[in-house]
Length: 122
Image (cartoon, rainbow, N blue to C red; front, side, top):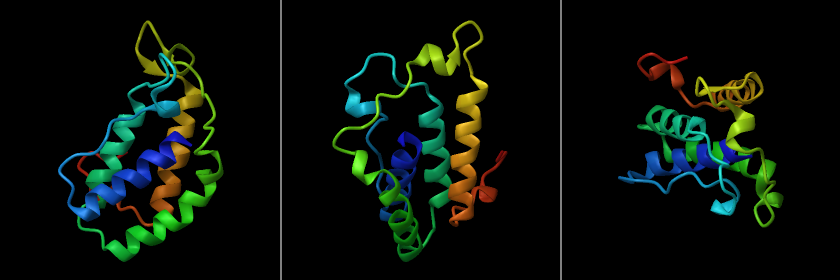
């Protein structure tokens, strides 16, 4: 859910010409240790990839994604704490969290976010 939320927000900021966007806050910032940095990386990638996108195209993407998490906005799932999403010794994402990141990134690609325009896109 958090990746879809930040991705939609990043697209909107990019196409509207915003100079900044609000930071990542899992569960509205209620829970300690529930952000990992991978969410911020995803937001930055989506924002950069969306620069130059037509507003109508961005709106179509938002209209497809928002219904997938809209019902949970009032009571978002708690998610997992940092130490369950990252190896705290190496500061590397867990396989599970990285798999989710890649799955959602592909979903955004399939909806038309041009990540291929990014230097060093993965």
